Image: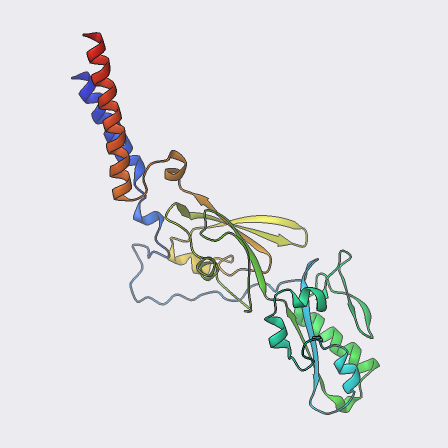
Length: 276
């Protein structure tokens, strides 16, 4: 009788600890007070990103008049195979801007033709764009040139590690992306990943900070960390079920319990037969 009670207890413990709750693996769940068609205002406005060391930039200068063509061409990334390639085609070539773009060096500077070193670290791309426009207009271009300066980052880079389908560094050519979109673009999170405890490791001028978001809650869209920033790292922790080694689905849980139950029964029978 004691053996049967022990086996039943083992069965119940494994059954309750094994299965992964649906609430742990479902994205953006509504709370009990929210309505199905309720409008959620997403806070897309964030503090502007300020350039950091090793950021790679694309700088383009255009004019609506055919003036100062030689000076303008000095800012255009060249390609030995096709001199007529435009910036969008070049940007699609992996690593092209790393070799031909403008990299913020360890001193926080970029080297720009004619202007020399510019202290870019800590600037936003808009501030750097305005600064270059002002310097070139005052020193080199005629007022009628009406130049247009465009400064862009070499895509939005982020890294995914932990319990994710496709870990590693990712890059997308968009101005803004949410953490849910970023994870989906990286292959998603398997059933063993804990969506309630996703960490974002973010770089700031003063150092690195870690923030936690719960992707199972719908109101995460209002989090200041819902939208990624360049060089963010997404860390997804595994659920306890993975470290325990039990099943994560109903079928795998049943198989695990059956195996444990069979082994336990066999052990009890063997002990009984030896004692007799």
